[in-house]
Length: 352
Image (cartoon, helix red, strand yellow):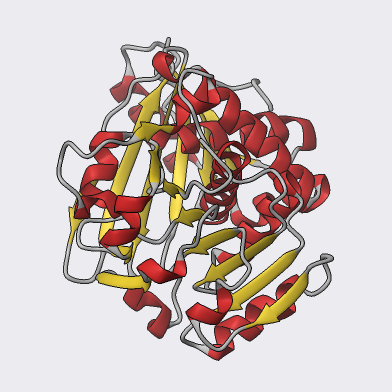
C-alpha cells in the first residue's frame, strides 16, 4: 500500500473485498483466513481481551469489538437487526479499522459485512477441525440465510465436507442456498424439517437470525459423536439449543466472560464448566474425548477473529491493489499548527 502521504489511509470497499476474494479464490481465501485465525488463537495470551461494547434496543444490537496484540490495534463496528431482512436490508453489517499501536495512526479502513461472514465461517471450520470426528463429511445447516453458504464453503475448504442437508422455516431461503452452492461439488439435500436435516449428519450448524430464546435443536436431535456448531445464538436472550443438549455436551467457547452473556451457555449456571478454544488449538486442553462424545462450539464471535481478518486483508490488499486511498488524517506542515492548516485552506479556496 502507498506510504507517500501520512494523511491517506487505504480503504477496502465492498467492491474491493469482492474482487480480492474472487482473485484469490473463495476456498483459498477461506483457507488462508482460517490459518491466520488459528495462528492468532495460538498466541491468545498476547491479546488485550474484553467483552464487546453493546448498545441493545428492541430491534437489535450495535456493538464495538476492540483488541490489540501490542503492535496492531483493531476494532469492528457491527450490528445485528433481524427485522432488517423484511425491509430489504442486511441483518448484519460492519466495518473495521486496523491501526499502528506505536503512533495511533490508522493503517486501513475496511468493509466488514462480507468479511464478517467469511471470518465467522472460517472460525467455525477451525473449531470443527479440532473438535469434530476426523471422518466427518456430512453437515446439516439449520437456517439458510446470509451466513449459510459461507459456512458450507469453509467446512468444505478445511474439512472436506461434501454433503449438505439444508433446512429453513422459509423454503425460499433453502432454495437460494441450494442454488448458490450447486456448482461447488456438494451433494445437497433440501429437508422439510430440522429433524430430517440432522439425520446422518456428522456436524450440525445452527445459524438462525431471530433475537429470541428458541429451541432449534431438541435434545433427541443430537446423537452420539456429533459436533454442533452453534452460530446463531450471539446476544442476551437469543439461543438455539435445548438446555439438555448443553448438559450432555463438551462445550468449547471463545472468551467465557462474553459467551456466558451472549451464547448458548447463558442457559447454564455461571460456573458451568467450559473449555476455551485457544487452549485446544495450543495443545493445552483436550478437545474431542471419544468418537461418541458430543462436542459443542458455542460461537458468538470475538474481537481477535476480526483482528485476524483485518490483518489478513491488509496483507492481501497491499499485494493485489484492491483498495483506494482516503484523505482521513489531518497533516499540517507543523504538527502543532492544525488551525493554521485550516486558515491556509481558506486562502486557497478564496483564491480559486
